[in-house]
Length: 262
Image 1 (cartoon, one colour):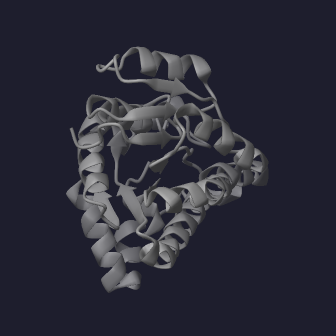
Image 2: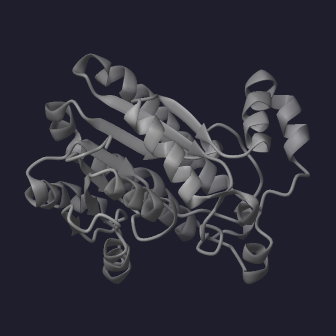
């Protein structure tokens, strides 16, 4: 098993991509620390692990409470004595125009998706360097492209990509891998829980047509095991969009402005 006895800490582990990755790591023999705000949901994930003989721990934490990052890192280290891999997966999305989105909601998104992630990473970094381990961030194709209805979300994800790509260069000589995984549309509840979403938007979301969370997790675990840098996981349309954006930003804007992106 590729991750046997590795200590993997996953934020946003109570559902969606985090849950699927947690189950994948457990199946591979890893000792998983499960974090999110919802203790009951984390316990449900833990109870559904296939390798029940492999230890795992539920450690509730709200990444928006980023001033508590150093405290929660100490608690995480007390779980198994070390941390080999941090998976920064916690986050929320957006499905509303900027003019219709209260600033307090934009601030909440940026605190969760960007600031909280950076705070937790900085707090755990000395341990990851000590273990020559890995920092993984589940960012998004929105860290590379732009669409309507994602202004604050794009700001957060662009920030994540910039920060972690720079961090990768800083840590290259330390034996630490920084893996930036950029999902496209994946079939999770991300649209249901997004800022500005409605039942109608969630019902007709492009995410419903995307890869399953389990298929994503299979690809993500492979990339993490291979200690890759930037990794895209999703459909062909999003991949073409990222390529077009890189080659001609103006042409990309014309291409994307009338596309369905909710």
